[in-house]
Image 1 (cartoon, rainbow, N blue to C red):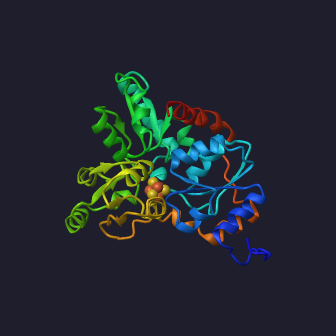
Image 2: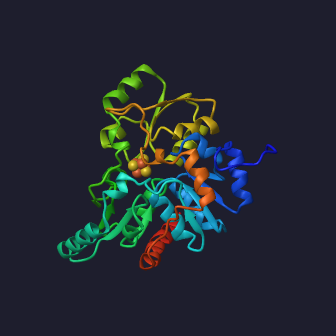
Image 3: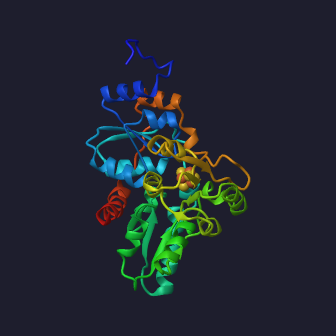
Amino acid sequence: MENKELTLLEVPEPAQIRDWATENGILILAHSYQDGFLQEAAHFVGDSLELARHAAQANATAICFCGVHFMAETAKLLCPDATVFVPDMEAGCSLADSCKAEDLARYQQHLTEKLGKRPTTVAYVNCSAAVKAQCDIICTSGNARAVVESIPATEPILFVPDKHLGGWLNETLGREMILWNGACEVHELFSVETLLALQNANPGSITMTHPECPKPVRDASDFVLGTAGMLRLVKSSEAKTFIVGTEANMIYRFEKEAPQNTYLAAPGASCACNLCPYMQLNTAEKLWASLHARGPEVDVDEELREPARRALERMLAVL
Ligand code: SF4
């Protein structure tokens, strides 16, 4: 590190930020959908499952979470004694917002009356702590198949909040889970027409799309994978060109960890960037300011902590 005093007014280089955080006892976690600067500043970068595991195992007393609000809540649930804070409190998630706890409670009640028994509720991790507290088990895109397979085939299952991920699980596992009608606004905008055009222009390329994408886009892909699965594929495949159907910042991580390949972002129907507007709210300046302020802090209501944490721990026990 340069022998220069770091001030709040001037944002230092990512490595300097990380070192400063280390010296001040703060662990920086960043989701792979954050921009390259934030990924470089973080002590650990990962998908939701990797970050949840890392948070659960870290003995941190302060965590700065570069991601969206539900991810920071998850870290708080798994590290209840740590102060968890975020660069921007407004960084939410359209998918999490599509499932409100009170609406879910009403629907669970309706299904219980209709089915004569309460369905097992599986929640994709992209939901609020209040929703997690009403669910039996959580999953991420990386372990969703294993989580659903851990539930007996005879059990009725309600899957929330992502209808596309749930639909993909139903297709690939032969289940008939009842699906909540939610979707991610970033993955829902991928266009199958522009994807096919990109494939035609790049013969020999491999198309990987995220299970949050709609079925026509998934069906036009060679692989449907969570981000950790995509990372394993680009490191091990003999292909040289990959079309990437997920949030475009993921390409930063691919280029860093498998730089031998070429990566092309699958285009959206109306916008070519495929960047999550919520993740983009976190910036270098806000990260640097939040580290000094140790805030804004994310907390979870006392009564939600135990049930939400139980649902998360059931997931961590499966995989
Ligand atoms: S990419 Fe989609 S699911 Fe992920 S945080 Fe953004 S809106 Fe939510």
